[in-house]
Image (cartoon, rainbow, N blue to C red; front, side, top):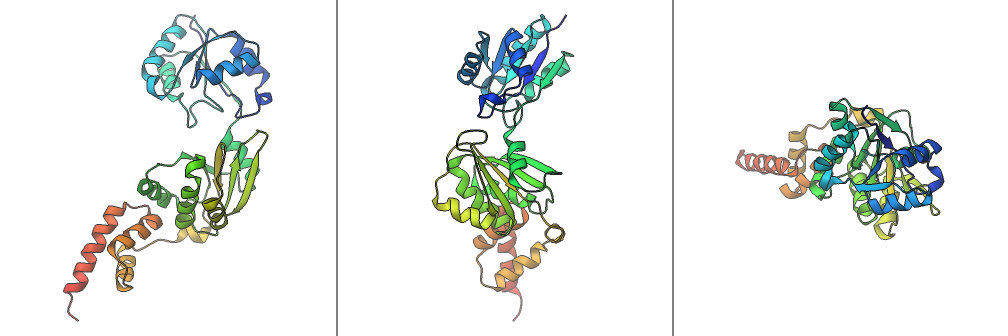
Amino acid sequence: MAGRLFVVGTPIGNLEDLSPRAARVLGAVSVVAAEDTRSAQRLLSHLGLHVKAVSYFEGNEASRSAELCARLAAGEDVALISEAGMPGVSDPGERLVRTAAEAGLPIEVIPGPSAAIAALCGSGLPAARFTFIGFLPRVEGKRREELGLLRRNKETLIFYESPARLGDMLRDLAATLGPERRACVARELTKVYEEFVRGTLGALSARYATEPARGEITVVVAGASEEESAVSIDLEAEVDARIAAGNSAKDIAAALALLTGKPKRQIYQLALARAGQRRREPG
């Protein structure tokens, strides 16, 4: 018989959050496929287990997935874990699960902690419907374009971010979604210094512009109101109005890319064309 792939949720900080079922499975499998083998060994040592751990990360997903599926087909049980939380959620794992599923191999999920859900539940923001975004693009232009596309989304938004980029991210969130939009910065979840900082995007942006952030960070943002969701922008009319106000094509492109989610270059070219047309018009 084929072995079973166990997708195991692991603690995001507090080791007491590992379920008894997860501990039992980790002790029974032939091998543990781990995003970070050092973190895996610390967890296994904490449990008093001596199980082989092999690396499974973004750089070796293709080759390792084939290797692990061969072991499953040969009858070995395999546990898949990420460094923290649920494999596949902003962590490696999706490819192995898909490969195993396509091969008809049995898969069992052992639910566990999730920073996204923990932050959502502690944020005080609507939790009935939400959109998980994960990490935004690191490049400022691409990050702002993606945020522009989310401006009218009525569901609560959940992001992951690094401490080094939190200030820039909150600045862009406030500029794109509006400084009065409610939000929460959740830090070091389940750990000793767990913290939920709630406020408006404007207030949070001002705070973290000067205050260094530390630890693992999840940002939760309220969805658009009915009024915000219904607002649409006539791009050409908005460009014309800003040209008339004396704004440069560069400034217009930067501002409207935030509001619309359209590429800055596209708006810049439109602004140049509209400005040229305006100069050619009589009067």
